[in-house]
Image (cartoon, rainbow, N blue to C red; front, side):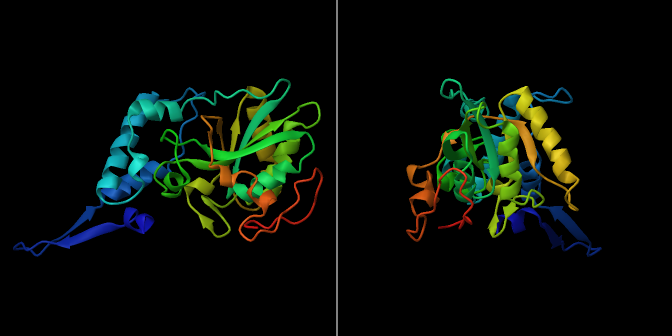
Length: 264
C-alpha cells in the first residue's frame, strides 16, 4: 500500500470560473524516490555529500512517513544514531580469518548455502546499510529503515577464496530482480555485495562483469563498503539447519549439495 501511495499523484478539480484541473504531486512521491535511490559509495569522489546531510534528510523523511501512519515507530532517530548505523563494521574476525557480507534475498536460505562452503568458519544473519541504530526484524520489515538482510561470512582465506564465496552468492539468487527474490518483495531483499577491503571490491566488480556476460538481463546488485552489522534475533540464526518453520532440519555439512528449502 505504501508503494502504491508513494508512486501516485493526486488530481484535484478546483471550483474556479475556468473549471481548471490542477495536478498535485503527493509528497510521498519524493519520499519514495529518495528511498529508492542507491546510496553513494563513501569511497568514491564525485559529488559525495557528508553523512550528516543524508542523516538529516532521512530523519525528515521518516518523520513524515510516521506521521502518516506508515513504517516503524523506531524509524525516526537522531542523526547521531544514523551515523552509527552508517559507520563501518567494527567487529573483528577471529585471528587469521576474514569477513564478507552478502545480501541475496531472505537470509535463511542464503546462510545455509554459505554454511556448506568449505573454509567458511562462521556465519551470522543480520541487518546492514540502513539508517536506524540497532533495528529489530519488525523495523527492517517495515521497509522504512533501508536495511538489507545479509549474511556475514567469516572464512579462512587459506582454505576458501573470496571468489569461491562470490560463486556461491551468484548461484544462490537472481541478481537481476530489483528488491525482490521470488515471492519476497522489499528493499531488505535487494542483491548486494558489501566489501571490507579494496581487494574484495575489485574481485566483486570483476565477478559482476563476468556474470553479466552470462545473463540477458541487467544485474542490479549493489557493491558497497561493509557498514555496521546488526546481528539478527537469535531465532533467525542457522534457521534452516535448526529445522525452519516445519521442524525438518537441513544439513549444513561442508560440501552438501542437497536442495535448500527456503522456509524449511
